[in-house]
Length: 355
Image 1: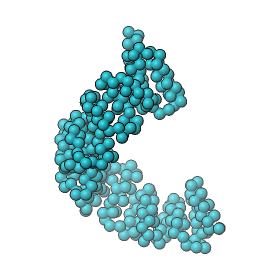
Image 2 (image 1 turned 90 degrees about the vertical axis):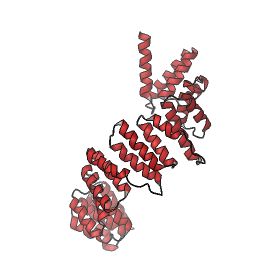
Image 3 (image 1 turned 90 degrees about the horizontal axis):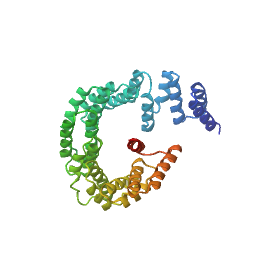
Image 4 (image 1 turned 45 degrees about the vertical axis):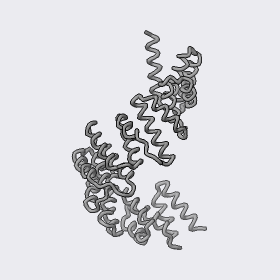
């Protein structure tokens, strides 16, 4: 069992950052038997000690094995010098396209998104992969070079929709649009273009709707979700309903939100109950609103609705008990959604009482 013990001791040494000791253990193992995992960990330990020639020797016999090839590449991406990565890419005989992708990730790991964007853009010129182009747009946005990013975004908008997985293509376009910081009117224009390109694909439509809900465009989300496609699988139908009910709530179509939620009770999670509590209260269904809001406590919105219903009924003791329940949850440091809304609500009540 000595090799196994030495191997475990080597791993412990790595965990402690004691790479000299790790090298000693792994070298002792390799004197007795060759082992791929030991050779990989030895090479990594050499690298941490900046003994790069020995690192290359340790890694050399692993380059023809895909699993270790990828693990070595991942390790090289975190080295301090790009020349080390370049040397490895030469040894492993990567294609120019894969080399550029590797360098893009390298620069990201070293907090240089502009260099990463330039490498990704160059990769796009070699192989016109829309995912690579979308990544370049996003990276230019993260680097603060919005002008350059918008130029590439126009190229992305001209790419033909793929026959397979149109939903993924829509996700790429929306992620790129997110980074470009367009004004509301321009953003809506591009969103309509993305929708047209997505066609009747439900996934594309729902992704666009979610984008709208995240960017104060609930009216657009409502418009594109109003026509429910036929014969959708149950999971997609429930997601469609969730998005439509959120859009209705944001544009204050509470009656429609209520009926939409009641027609799709398969959702029945915490968010469903919160939305149903809001829709019920805003349509005068106070009994149902109270039932749903109490079921999700402690919760900021649920507490507001429960307090309001009890207060309207003249049951001030129960309304006060809701506040006590929230105070207990806060004291226990329980995670509470929308707590800022509830605190603001209490402050508003306090101001009115003082007046």
